[in-house]
Structure formats: structure tokens, C-alpha cells
Amino acid sequence: GLLLAKSAKMIYGLEIVAEAIEDAKRNAEINKIDNVKYYVGKAEETIKEVMESVSKQTEGDIIAVVDPPRGGLHPKVIEALRNCERVKYLVYVSCNAKSMMEDVKKMVQPCTKKLIGVPFKVIRTRPFDLFPQTL
Image (cartoon, rainbow, N blue to C red; front, top):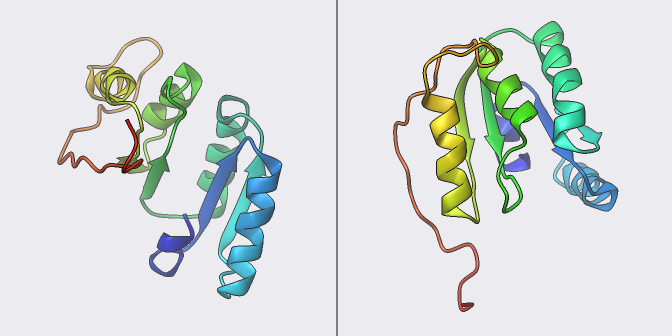
């Protein structure tokens, strides 16, 4: 998220590992980045609070960047992203193409009782080797 800080009004980071949050805070301080706020906890437990906070504190479009575990996004996270009308763009970083495809299907499918927001549209996909020189 810190890479995007100069192009964004505010960056919100969700992370389950408290030590990773502390590292990110130190990196932000070293790089003189002050437009960032972090939430510690499982994404499925913090996403609702974050989306409500973002909606109250900011205006304009939201670009969400997700980097889920190998199993993919929790259904509550998918629901929160789909149901927030201000989330206009989604960047999905994945280390598991299969779970990513399952999540993408849910992001682009027509509205349901739980997924009431406008479906996302896939614009581009780009593979990167996140773990080079490994099998």
C-alpha cells in the first residue's frame, strides 16, 4: 500500500499479523508517508469497519488492493467489496491462480441477495512469478 501513498488521499491497510503492521508503520515514517491508517485483525472481521470509516472520512472513488492467502478472499470480504458502491477498481494480487479465479467469478457475477453491488469488470490480468527460483 505504501507504494500508492503519493497517488492517494489515504491508504488503509488490513493485516492479521501485528508485527507486519509495525514494520509498515516504520516504513511509512522512514519514507515520510503520513496518509496511512492500519487495522490489525482478520480481514473478514475488520473489513466492515474499514469500509464504513473510508465512506465517512473520504470522498471519491476507492481503489481496493487485495493480497489474500492461498485460499482466496473470505466471503465477507468479497461481499464488502462488492457492496460498497465507491469501490470502482480492484487490484488482486494472488499466489494461487485457482483461488483467484474463484474469487474473480464472484466479483463479476450478476447481483445476488448477498452481492448487491454492481459487478466488477475484468480489464486486465498479468501474471508475475512471486516466488522465482522455487517449485
